Image (spheres, rainbow, N blue to C red):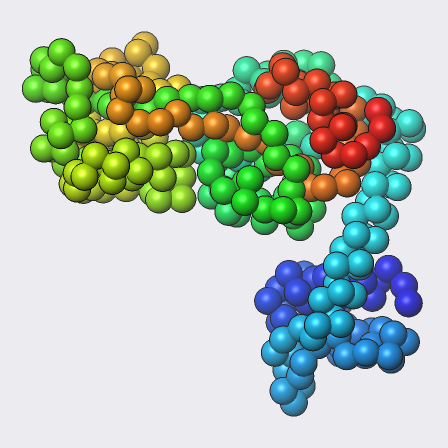
Amino acid sequence: MNLQQLRYLNEIVRCDLNISDAANALYTSQPGVSKQIKLLEEELGVDIFVRNGKRVVAITEPGKAVLEIAQRMLIETENLKHVGQEFRTQDSGSLSIATTHTQARYALPHVVKEFTKAYPNVKLGLHQGSPTQIAEMVLSGEVDIGIATESLALYDELVTLPCYEWHHCVVVPPKHPLLLEKKLTLKKLAQYPIITYDFAFTGRNKINQAFHDAGIEPNIALTAIDADVIKTYVELGLGVGIVAQMAFIPERDRHLRMIDAGHLIQPSTTRIAIRKNQYLRGFGYHFIELFAPHLTRDVVAKALHLTT
């Protein structure tokens, strides 16, 4: 048994049991991958995969147990490398963050600026995706830290910590009739076409829940994955927008007006996610604390069951 076999096993599962895709991702040959998996099965005395001819179609029950242990071993192998890097080059290396467009565009710029100033020799990578994609990137080890509002807390394999609460707002063109309302209601809002986030993004479930609880059917005319697109179509007069309040910047959005919707829609919570038992380098802890000052190294380390 060797680490290469465990990496092959993990990659096959990550590629939905497609050995050709796994081989391509690992820059090796399909026969070579198949041979190593067969050798691993022979050594363990169990079938890891269910096969139909030469195709892998499922993972067996003992295979699931083997995979779980293999993934832990691969994580710990990476942790060993990080320990060496931590003490050899404390202020250089790389840090990968996966997040949504809204966080990348409106919440992270000042954090990134401060971080790059403090760690000029650390290569910082930002990856954007849906909350589900972000969780999967963290789980696979593709990124070190995930930041999103929805879904992250649903994954048992992740440690998730709350960063801050935020509210939605309604954006409309100047002189829109809703600006004359003393206090906006969902009933009034539902009289207009609504442009808001795609279901998987930025507190959309809280928007749906608010209308559902009020017994009102909203007229969702258009959805998008980021606030900039939503605001563009509001400017074109295609409807009223519901976006994260942080996404409205008066000096930039001069052709729009904002109406607070905090009393209509429950607040959402942005969370950070880290793989359980992951070894974070010192600058990773610092990035998290820059983003959420209450998440100190001690707090995060305890959540990860690591010693500082």
